[in-house]
Length: 522
Image (tube, rainbow, N blue to C red; front, side):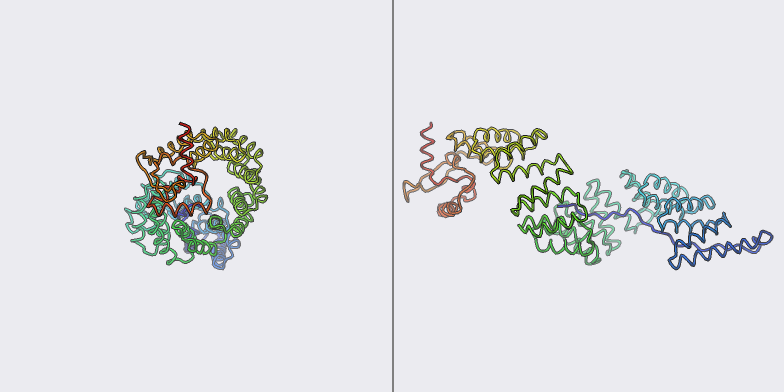
């Protein structure tokens, strides 16, 4: 599954409101080319009119004429910077606002606009420097400390960010946004309890603060408090039914609780709001695959690949859906596309090997796994599957040697000791089979030599035979048939035996004959 979405607030300001025009007095006009001043007023007012009617480019032309006539007009430069910013001319916007600070050095709004523009363009160090200058001019302005905190977050200076957010809160105790952003920093530092307190403080100030509810849900989710996470995210979407992030997160929580239909519904809702939320579509593919709804999974992954044709994760997952759905040739094609993008993708190579194994192409599988292990000697999955390939090929010596290597690295890896026991039993090495299962039980901390169960002996018909657990160990195989399992479960239930334990250990019905073989080997 994909990540939980935490709502970060990076850019806070758009274009600030137009400042009012500062008219020149009569004295300022007399004897100094009054026609030019009238022209200045004309172009300034024309720019305001254009801007108010959404004609931003025309407003820019008018205000450029205004500042050519009156280069000391801070208000014209200010508005010109806002217009430049609106059409994406960020360098020109910053230059215009810097001109404002030259004319009126204490203009905090101009500094704010410069800092925000740097932030929007990921120039976070420059933004921090500008906000520091502004704070020197007006140290008691909480917004400036807040903006500086945002810049610090993006330069990775988390402790400085915490300091500035706290400064903002001291100056303005009801600053919900500062509490929320402070929570985000604590979340990134994995200080979940402090993050939780910050988000709750933001909600206490503003109980309709959807971003804080969304982030609070992320904390609960990370702490394993899934029901509380669901409640937080349900509150977020109740307040704002168009918050796609909260729907996405809510789907993850439902999925965590095994609530299939609810998870699918909420991920679908997220996609209705934001069709480009590919994480939600990916999660749908994963949950469909897990529920053997392969056609639906394939459809979701294909939708992702329309927008991101070289997404290796989506290509790989599509390959898995094809493989599990029985379309192995299409599966191999997808895995090879992954390898075209990521030649060293061991998971794709491993799955191609599994397909060769399923098709009985043992030599091809063995060759592939050996090549894979040459590149990644520590890749246990490949080593384990190499053992499986040798086993099904009938090469028990290679299978046991391979699985012994796996067990020496990770004794808990899958069913490696069970597989070793089965292989040793097939080779007639009953003592080795017993030892393999004893090691498995010892590693799991459940081995008990004194424990005995009652099990019916075939040769004694209805008589009961006490069999020590130690003697049952070699009976493990890959699995019973359905009929054998049903018969065994019925007998065990009648004998008041721990059924799950026995089903894990027993696969050979004729235990008496097996015990005789063991006795004969001693």
